[in-house]
Length: 238
Ligand SMILES: Cc1cc2nc3c(=O)[nH]c(=O)nc-3n(C[C@H](O)[C@H](O)[C@H](O)COP(=O)(O)O)c2cc1C
Image (tube, rainbow, N blue to C red; front, side, top):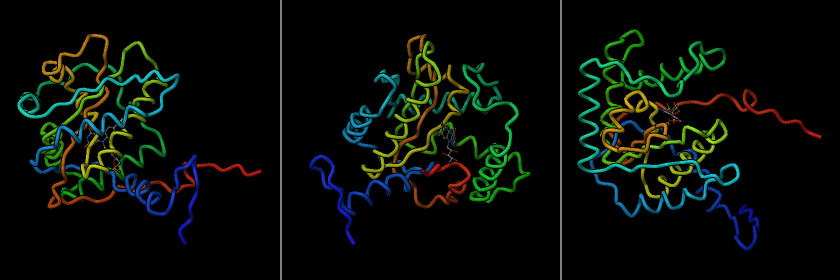
């Protein structure tokens, strides 16, 4: 049965409903892209749409830089060179994770690692192969487009959360264009190399990069799972 809900003149029918859920469930961290260029107009539509993301007091605290073509190729080259040379990471401007991750997060991280590397046929204890796979971050997994999202260093945790919502909106709208993405905090580890290409103002902290492109469907993956609903949601019914 087609359940239709009327919302201020917009009819939400099964087709619309399905499209929204599909955008959410078909988004995943894609780690293999083709070289097919991403149309500039598609990126403009997506980033224009993502401006409608919510933020506390409508601060819109995101600062986005889009890279394609020669500047992206240069960034990939510099980052790969740097990482291959064994350069230490740039000093952190924020901690990616607490040093001791407690339960249940540590178990979830281990499960993710197992899924990620078994999709690539890499044994858990094969540290070198895992490092090689991680190197693909610096090639943006082959993507011809990427964005880098910064947040003002004078803003606080709630604004960082706003930036997260914005990035999810970007990723969902990319699905509407047939595009995929992979958000990458990894780029914060070489933020100075990113800054060399982008020259952002001093007052900004790089939260993450995001590879954007058309999926290379020959690259295997295992869909990451999620904790059951009752592990993360509590309903208190009246
Ligand atoms: C803020 C953020 C940073 C991430 N950083 C990286 C990264 O540096 N490299 C990477 O391969 N994946 C990265 N991911 C992808 C996550 O590993 C992925 O979202 C998670 O395992 C869930 O899988 P899914 O997105 O495929 O559903 C990041 C995701 C988020 C939200």
